[in-house]
Length: 532
Image (cartoon, rainbow, N blue to C red; front, side):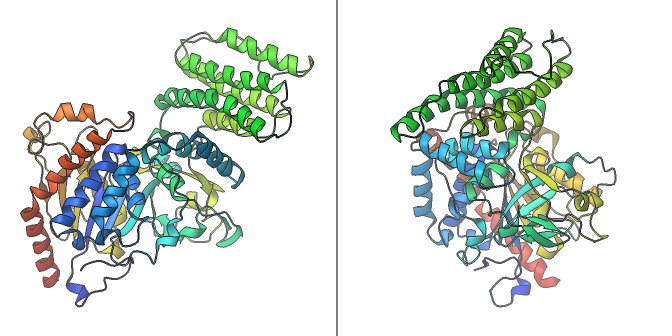
């Protein structure tokens, strides 16, 4: 077997002659989750799963990985584990009470609350159908027979740096052993990722993130760009609408403190504030909502409420200015409201709105703060906090973690579950590697294949890893590519049991139809390794 749950060795005789094979799962929401599972099942049936040393994922593929690695040595009993996963994701959603309890725990038990916490509870649980409170670092000795798992995100600030030479390192990987920057080589123990460090010394411990949060961190596809804000504001509106009456009922059942008659008015202010933000994003006049908020706050304060931002007629044609005004106004209202309502659930509802207008995702302490190391980019040493988000927002496949020099990867099998261009990830990986002088084969796609992709591509180069690229939907495994793309979109309601079964079959065909080609490339990697 070519397997070992360690990032430094392969526990087999003659290990220097054994090729290092990495399997990559791209992003793609539940499509990627189900597609990766179907692919792994067929790799197992083909007798090829033992050949995989690294299993690395982006976004939705990490949801599959998180489910698999709940079970020690899952690769030795994949059929059973697969059935368990399918039953769960085909079943009922997480209860409202459990979701609310989890949100409360996230809010009170760490220093940095962000939209990633909200995304975990409101969205990720809809697809994975569970709240996984396990810790990644606990898995380091439970998977001696499984591929080494690497979860991939990006550093938002590094991504935003305009670095013409390409020396910034936004690629951030998280494994059971360590979390850090793939190319820079700066790491911290996974159990300490999120804790506060100053000059390399831990100053303020934070609990290690759980697996639900990790899946939200990896799968935070909405974290980039203003175009997603309307979608998330609507989700928050639905959440707020459900939360308050259920919270009241739960409080009454538990005979907690008597109902505050003014609480309903505070809740209405928060709902009006959400509606104001949605109105502005949709180009509608929010004046009536604004007046309602001011009247209610004035009533709650006995006529003493003073908002910083006066009522003004917004120029909705200047959307950027209107949104900027709404961001400032939202923070002003939340601050005003917090003077009267500062306990659960108002504190978290106010914080969610503040996170929305500041667009805070995946915020953690910067473990490199004030380090003295000239080899590290100065931007990583000077900040107190960093924000992390879905790696698919930069490159929708986790090439860079497996291209670390220390990993000596010989063969990369890229499973592409992307919604759009099935070759974008491999082409962009080649371009980025060229810019950074990282060995990677040249990628040339026949023009006729762009709209009608085949199911198996091989890219080779001199002194580079071999890259196998397998698009999910192709002319071999499905008749009408566009029909399946439209059926299995990234942001849609959770798939039915029938859709899951059908998609697993489609993904599995890409492996079973190409078993001999995969064996051929693995054999070539073995021979090449033997010659080096």
